[in-house]
Amino acid sequence: MNMKRVVIILLALICVGVVYGQEKKKVAVLKTVSTTVSEDVQGAIQDALEEGIIATKSYTLVARGEAYKKAMEEFKFQESGVVDDKQLIEAGHAMGADLVCYAAIRKIDNNFRISYKMVNVATSEIPEMKSKSTKNGEKDLISVLDEIVKDMSEESSSYESIKTVSSAPNVAELMRQANAYFNNKQYGNAVPLYKQAAEQGDADAQNQLGYCYWAGDGIIQDYNQAVQWYRKAANQGNVVAQFNLGVCYSNGYGVTRDYVQAVSWYKNQLTKVMLMHNVILAITSITDTV
Image (cartoon, rainbow, N blue to C red):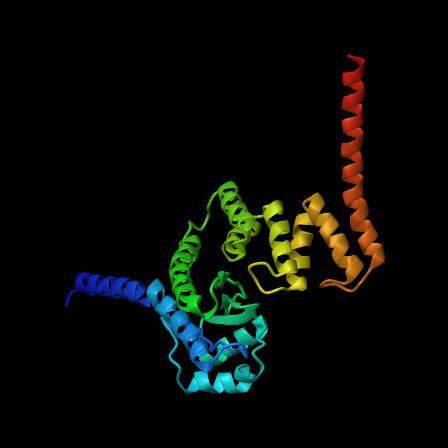
């Protein structure tokens, strides 16, 4: 076999490896726990979520095997019914999942509200989070579950398309899309776009990403990360970020409470506001004399 043929075969193998190496992300769907509905309804909700995962064709489902049972027992989801995002991430790690999907159901008067979300185990991002309510009690549960399955399929495709944007997209376009998602309360879709723009040095994106971390919108709440992004934006002169950083120092969010630092950042923000105020007054006085 000559060298040219060997090189061609190696290149072909590399290409095949790249194509088949793009594995689908693994999603674990945890059992819904509630004292307001029967075990059958809880199981139906889990089944519906799993159908939604399969329907996306973007993910592969983690089977309910031994790792799943062990995680459910370890974190005692069946007993408490109260699950926070950190527990979901820990359970996801235990099951070898990339993402964890969980739904909660609450009874409000004679109707039910189902809230579901997906958490990225590695990044803590929440690409999907939505709630649906029945209008005719248990009679609507099946139709609401069908709506959830449909929404999961559509929003998962949207989230995956966001992550395949060019590695160096236009910051203005990223911010336009991110703000549109944010204003529609689709925080899970907004966060990865803000992050892309923030990593390219955009101060507004850095401040907005800091806020998402601070509020827990679309990502697990993390005051330390919030301070980090607020500071990046504040050091670039972003007035809102300077104020937000002052709030963090005043209240001890992600930093040791330090009123001196807080006043320093408030002063920076106040100086610019006062400067703008003086400029407006000057313009007004000139206009009045004309």
